[in-house]
Length: 297
Image (cartoon, rainbow, N blue to C red; front, side):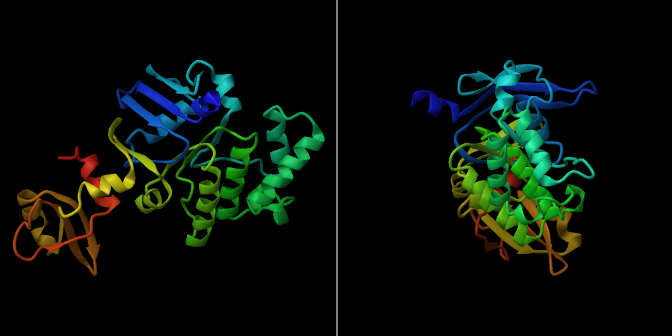
């Protein structure tokens, strides 16, 4: 029982990576990721993909450690690959192969050599991912949503203990996105799932814990609702003119700025009303995101 519980926790300690061009993609990243859905937020170039590719054994770290239970992720690559499911943001497929044949091939590579066992496993996975009716069609004929469902099916072949998904809903319509996340949430009840996304609402709704990364460093680690609670009563909003943006940025701690009905609406972080004209705003994870990537000041 102790071993099973250990395998459900991923421990990352002081992981660092600098590319030959001098970009420090990871700077002493340390995270403890328990069983369940774990959200990974960060702007483009924050280091999220580098972290996930390193955990997926696709590239080397310069220093640091990562363990899934007692398995050394960085040194025992073959062992971790047996327990890993990975869905990158972009993945290719063979042009004419069908979903059922591709999953059968992947199951063979995962070590499932008995044909009847593979057939049962592949069939169950196709049904679980709502692909049974199109199982014999070429993968290149699939829609974006179908391709992503196939992506999660291939990632789940072999019952992984660690599942890594990178921006999995890019290009999906709201209905497909909801179905995809329902499947991930179900899977995440029993294994470690790392979900990298730029959609902060998805992390709030799906993930019990999360991390925000920027410029290769961890800016926040904890529960999403706890992060939002830090800002309760401290977020103020106001619609301004575009010509006023520079002045407001200079005078106040503006943490976000979005166009609403053609005018900028700013969110300001302040313990009290900044000035007349500001209204209290409900704090959200998006406010936390912009606050933390700017250093949490």
